[in-house]
Length: 427
Image (cartoon, rainbow, N blue to C red; front, side, top):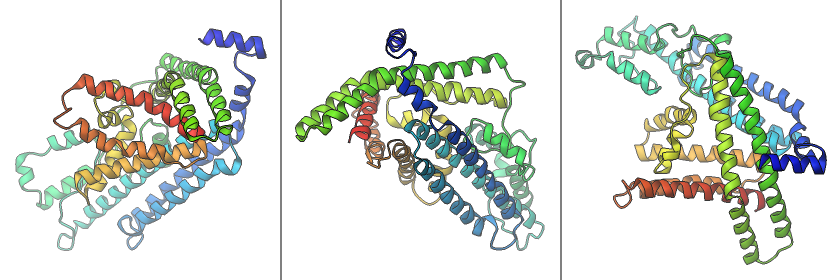
């Protein structure tokens, strides 16, 4: 397929890729690079906000005004950078990259700010224990983290200690433990430095920790192969798009403009969806491979980041809840830590799960809106529809039938991706 496409393009245009593709990819490169650098650099303002909240004694402390200052800053930051590509009239390819990168750094910034805000309040409680008669003697709050850290902290507490959690010495120990990294080499507020923040920005994770496990050195051969694979997969994506996706969409858009009958329009959409089932699924798999295997793997090598578990065997999923846990583990950990557990503080587990799906659906709809410059709600509706589907798949009638559920998952995945593309682009 690739060889045939390249030979035909060379015959027709003199280039292995079509001139239109070259022009599309090369447009906005300078402004995109500068804007992306400015967007990433602007997130560092969370660091002085954290230092201000830690040093404040009155209304500016984290639990009072600090959390609101950070939240307002994040809202204004998101509004600025989401609207930025529209102000500059970028191509959709530039908007794809910038929209995904913007949401990525929104999550990284949120995790950094809210975890350090929690630590600032924990440190304040530890200092206040110097005057036990006026200090808060409540149970130490452990911030939700990775499963490995939770197991480690739980194993350090004996049954006798659990029965005596209100004891002042035990409370001091619990608060001090919360302020120390799992590996024991970094203690809050030693992490509130520019170097630590830059290191976190480069690490392929969305959940901030005081310290991460590291590999001994960079494997330069692995980094080279992953970088080479990124460009190879991008070339394949461009080839599939220009050969099997773009021509179909262009022809279908022309037919829709010339048609007034609703039944004919429905037939055109159905035909377009069916023609893109295979190529769009291939594109999705290539995108997944580029991001979760090669790009994240490359940054893990650069930073010596030891946790390379960016995805699990999502292709064996028997329902959409399992897929959401396994296909994008960094985002799953973020939503679990900062949305689900935060919501469980105030709501029941089913409500917290619904809120988590709602936040995820809004994020996906925002990305599709930035890419297509349309707010249609198709993706939002499809994601929220997963909740009743999961309830059905986990009912007594269907539960345990792995082959049936996995076949249903793949069928809905293949059909859903093509349908979403057709609806967002053509309708």
